[in-house]
Image 1 (cartoon, rainbow over the protein chains, first blue to last red):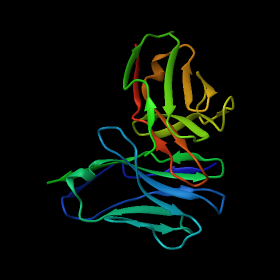
Image 2: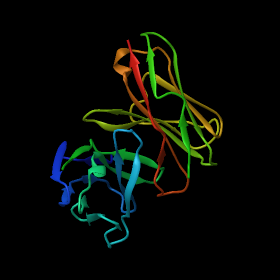
Image 3: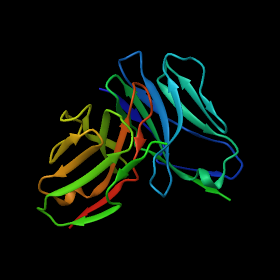
Image 4: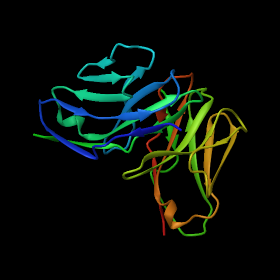
Amino acid sequence: AQTVTQSQPEMSVQEAETVTLSCTYDTSESDYYLFWYKQPPSRQMILVIRQEAYKQQNATENRFSVNFQKAAKSFSLKISDSQLGDAAMYFCALIQGAQKLVFGQGTRLTINP
Amino acid sequence: DVKVTQSSRYLVKRTGEKVFLECVQDMDHENMFWYRQDPGLGLRLIYFSYDVKMKEKGDIPEGYSVSREKKERFSLILESASTNQTSMYLCALTGTSGQPQHFGDGTRLSIL
C-alpha cells in the first residue's frame, strides 16, 4: 500500500525567509507522480508543484521548489522569500496507476510579518 | 479553467437522515473522486468513478454510496448519517494519467 507522511503538523517562518516542508512516502512502483497542494482558509485546493518520478531534475515553480530524493523516498518543498499569502495548509500527495491520490496529513504553515 | 462545483459549502443534517452531496464538472473528464478531510488525517478517498455508472471503493467507503448517472455529475450519498461523518467533503476530478486533480471548494457537513 502507498503511504505519504508529513511529520511536521505546524511550521512557521518570518516573512521573506525560506522554509522547507518535509514529506516522505512509500510505494513499490517505479512510475508515479508527486504533488504539493496548498489549501488556504478559503478551502480551495491549489496545485503548487508536480514532479514525475522518472525525472531526476527537481521541479521548480517561481519561489517554490522541491528536493526529490527517489532512493530515500523523500519529497520536500522549499518556499523562498515567504509571503503572507503563502500561509495555508500544505499537503503532499502521491499518485500512480489508476489516478488515486494518497495524501499526507498536512502541514499548517504560518507566516510571521 | 476547470470548474468543479459542489452544491453546498455548509450543510447541517440530523442523525439517521439520508444526505446527498452533489458535484458537477464543466469539462469532459472521466475520473471523479470523493474525499473526506479531517484534521491530522489529511484527505482520504471514499469512492471514485472512471465513467458513467462505474464506481470503485476507496479507502473508507463504509457508510457511503455514490451515483454517477451522467458524466458531469458525481453524487455522494450518506445512507443514514451518523455523527462520525461530520467532516469536510471534497470532490475532485482529473483527465489523463499523472495530471493533477482539480478540486471543488468543499462541503463542510455537520451531523447533529
